[in-house]
Each structure stands twice: as C-alpha cells, then as structure tokens.
Image 1 (cartoon, rainbow, N blue to C red):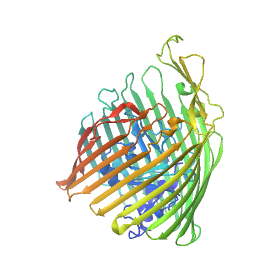
Image 2: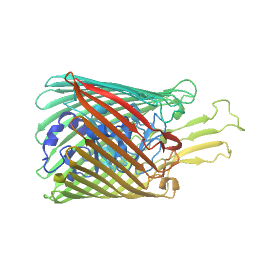
Image 3: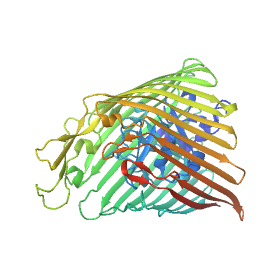
Image 4: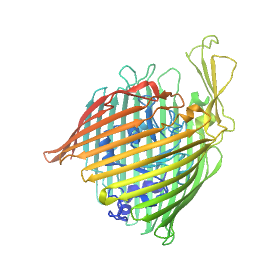
Length: 625
C-alpha cells in the first residue's frame, strides 16, 4: 500500500523522529525505523525484522543498479532475466517478476498492476537522492495490504537537506557509461531539487545483443505553509531502451505525487496524499507485446498518542488501477479496477519491558475479494541491550491483472499457422482464481552493544503458503501446442529457516556488515522446493583509511537454486566486488575519484544457465559545488 505516513514522515520531519531516541541507547545512524507499523520506533520495539541500507552502505557497495542493493539483505536473491529486467525475491518462489512483496518510493507503490513486476531499471531515482532503504523481512499485510505478501521495500529519499549540487561521470568496459547531476535551491520555507541522469551498458555478455540505455529526471520540493502545515510535491520521468535479437524494447515511467501534513500537537498529526503513476512498455512493429498501466492513489492517515501507553496509526486508501494490452488480454479496451483499504496499527507499552504491536487491514481488492490481514507481535526487553520478538502475521497476495484476465495467443514464427511445424503458445482465462495466503510465525532476537559497536539481529521463521498461483498445462491433444492457465495449487507450501544480520564497527573508520541465511521449502513440487538457496551469505567491508582514501569490498554467496517462470536451475555462485575512492578539493570544491570492480572472481550465472554476468570495471569522478 502506498504508505502515506512514511512519505510524509520521511519527507517533512525525519529529524524530529530521530531526536526522540538517545544515541547512547541505539546506533547513531539509524536509531528508529518508520516502515513496519507506520510509527517511528526503535528497532527493539519494531513488530518485524528490518534491514536498513543507508547512504554509506549504498556508496560502499559500488552498485549502480537499485536491484543489486538487495544482495545485502539476508534471504534475498537477485538475478537478471535480461540486462533490462532484474528480478528480486525473498526466500524463494522467485521468477521473472518480483510480485510477492511491496515496493515503495517515499510511500508511493511502484509495482505494476499488470504482471506485478517492478521495473528496477526504469525508476526516476538517483542513488545519491536515497536517504535509506528500509526492508521489512516479514509479511506486512496489516500495514501495506494485499501485495506485502513476503515483505516490504520502502525507499526513502532525502528531505530538507538534499545534499550539495553535484555532477558525476563514469566510464568503464562492457560499454558502461554514466552521467548524473543534481541542482537544488530554496529558502527556509521552500526547498527544491532536480536530479537527472543517464546510464548505458552492453548487458550481461559481450556476445548477447542486450545493450541498455537509461535516462531519468526527478523533482522534489517542500513548502512549509506555516508552523503546522507542509506540502511536498514530487514528479519524475524515466525512459529505458534495450536492444534484443529481433527488436528494441522501450519502457517509459512517469509519476506525480502531492502530499500534505498537518501537525496537531507534539504527539499527533494528520496527513493526506495523492499520486499518479503511468508505465508503458512496447517494441517496434512485429508482434506487439506492449502494454500500458495507470495507477491513481489517494490516502489519508492520522497517527499519534491515544494515552501515555498507547500510540496508533489509522488510515484509509482508495486506488484505481488500469491496464491495456491488445496482446496479453486479447482486447483493445482498457481494464479498470478499484480497490479500497482501511487499517489500524497500535503500539501498547504494558510496562518498560513488555510491548505489544497489533493491527490489521481490511480491504476490497480489484478482484472483488474482501480480505482482512491481522498482525500481533509481543516484544520483551529483559535489558537495555537486548530484546526478543514473537510474531504472528497473516497476509494475502491478490492475483495480478495478467494472472486473472490473461488471454493471448502466440505463434512461434509469427506467420500463417501450420499444424505440422508451428508451436502455439496460448494462455486461457483463469477460472475462480483465489488470492494467495501466507501465515507467518517468527521469533526474533536483537542485541545492541553501542560501546562495542556491535548489533546482532536474528530471526527464526516458519511460514505456510496456501493457494499459491501457478501455471498449469492444459492438454490439447496436439504435441505442438502449449496451452496454459493460471490456477491455485491445491497443496500448501511451508518455508522455515533462520537468518542473521550482524553489524560491527570496531572503530569510527571501519564498518563490517554480514548477513547469513538458511532456508528450506517443503512442497510437492520439486522446483518450488529448490527455489530458495539453502544457504546465502553477504559481507560488506568499508574502511576509511584516512581523510582522503576509502576502500570497500562486498562478497555475495548464493547456494544452488531454481528460478521459476522461465528460469532454470543455476549453480552456487560467489561474487566479489570492490571500490576504491579518493577525496580532495579543487578550487574549494569537493571532488571524489573512484574505481569499482564487479564480479572480480569471474562471471556467475543468474536466472538461466546461459546468462552470465562478466567481470567489469568502472571508473569515475564527482564534483560538488
């Protein structure tokens, strides 16, 4: 769900939330999280495990694609179905579309209603504008509705202080080119920034025709109307083009967002927002595989203190989604569906050691189904340095437009049908397709030792999935025909495992971040059982050598696994990245030169065995003014 509180909490008053928690008790960089309950809470009070990827981690990783950042999160798997289409999944069940968790930018939902995918390479977003990314590692239907099935990614951009204007350029092998810039201005009551950039690369392998070019522009402004009221306006456009064997693909993305916040008193506030998002995907003449989607979203929320022991966030949302595609839906008309949601989340402090997080969301989705997603979490803090969390979550995933309404027909040679030679691919209209359901139980442990610079976050989980949506083959009696229909699986699937997140700062110049995870899926379908790597591990080392030099390295391991929905089984892989940066001043301006290397151990296969990411290097510079 497009989280209004998160949009305005992060956009207008992040400093107020952070100031409420002492740096002695929690880490300086991230004392609170905003996403899990829509209330600013210390990590020890959160109802869910959260990974926070901050600006320092983003810079140290050396990544240039947003999707790659989730390699840092325990239990996440990242792959490229093509150079244009990264896909991300959490604890398996992954295919070419990341449709089982919610993705937000400043609270605005960015997954498409047609296939449920996130166009990671077509977002109007600059890396340097990201303040932090909060990743909820648990179902979060009580806060974000039907598509927060496995978790939530909330990308929060800078507010107030947008950072210095800059220009950054990079050049590397494999056709890598990048150019980014930001300008900003304003006064005490009004601030604005405009960011723009372009990036090119030749894709996964030199012998594969999948060159990609990205371009974007993004605007953000904030206006303080008076001591209690503020407005934020955001708008952006992005265009991506990928070469393929037979025709280029063009993808466009545009959005506009208006938010209003009214502070009633020190303990409560009201906020409202409206946003519009449009996306188109198309190719050149031939078989038109294009589509267009539009989303209108309006929401309102109140959050504050009900009593000394009870805080709450309550809100409602209306959404209108539409999609149009002659090919995928076998009709020229636009499909339009409405959905409504109302939610409430509460934090009840029983005493200094015990806290209860509770809440739920009632919604009527675009499928016409009425659903209720509850959550109940008990937090116990035996000391100032550690806490335990017992979680229960029930969440749903509504079928996408394509799963629910797909009707298409494809002839492999695009010519006149010949039953003797041609292969026909056909998708039939689904029959009584139900939402997917997950019941999640977890036990969490958080240890924070600020004096030692150590934080350990452990999560033991057991999830049960029911009515998972899959593709079933419908026999046609002709060996050359492949006819499919989306159906619900009759048998439940269970997931169990444990994951850790360990951060250690032995001194102010060194940061070590580790994320091991073990997972096992039990299913009657062997491909689903193999869709989560049994073990994965990430390690990020960041060292400030002196005032000028900084070095970092990232190591990412994934066990062998199977990607569903057009993917294949891929072997275990190990990836090593490194970054070296040098800072200085030229004519009074801050300048940084940097060099990054990716996949230094050699290429690793992703999604399909023949798709290999190769070793590559990128060098560049940045100047602020």
